[in-house]
Image (cartoon, rainbow, N blue to C red; front, side, top):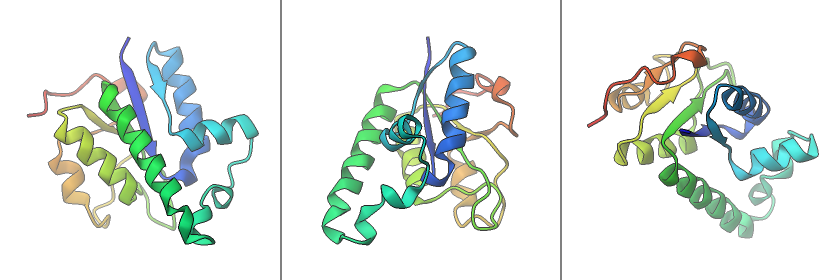
Length: 150
């Protein structure tokens, strides 16, 4: 069974958890970020509760721990899937963490899938395509339709 590690902005974690369920039904093992799991369990998807470092800069060490933990999951997984819904008026939003996670997957020669189209206005549009990302156009059934990444 292939393991798909899901990546996204915390703003999309509700949708990310729904996609994890769909992937499970498709026969994949879906791995989600720690806070996505916590949000699912609590039913509260308010990101402000988890982003305590804005109020208390000493909590940036928590942010670092979240990043390292998800990097570990990407390293252990087979594939990454980036959930890139609309955020702040930008279709196909991918934030800095998502790009870092994609960069790690690229470095490790892992297939990178992106759920939705990526707007050419995205500051790192060329990097998303330059890493050989497969754009699924919202169709999870296209997972597996990739070429070997060098």
